[in-house]
Length: 217
Image (cartoon, rainbow, N blue to C red; front, side, top):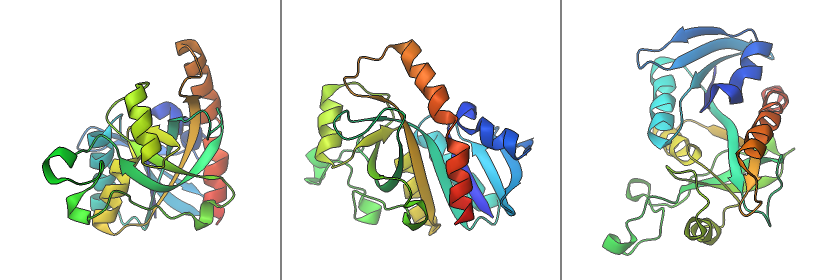
């Protein structure tokens, strides 16, 4: 069985509709959809936005279903010189750039003591039809130049609010993880809110086809 964690219903709706997945409500209030794709059963949970929601949803799937893999997909921002708007990327490393104990312990930004690392590494061999990118996660939707500098310093090209937390949760449970993302906007592109939501709809329309390819592999 494959567990799928997605922040927003709009990001998952094509998968839900095209597989005729059935909806239930988890005891933590989150919506879970049960379906089959390429003869493989899946449980898809709508986590909500942010790291706590993402980690809680991922752990719920792991605790309550016999999942062999976790898959996360969704929309992200990107660095203008390294990514393309409406481009899709397979994530080969994740970090949490808002987790910072550097002033206390003289460690790197994003360093997680329990794992002795800054980065978690999703599996990529079955997503090699996409270009790779590093993903930086924080609990904020950012356009701040200081954040962009930190993301660049961490050698990441895309950023979101969930992926790093999902990766840490999977690592804690020794569950393999696959992550792919679609870029809705890039830093400094000047897109307004209307352009962002238009791009969001266009990006979300491509997730189902990528998931089909991943399930085939």
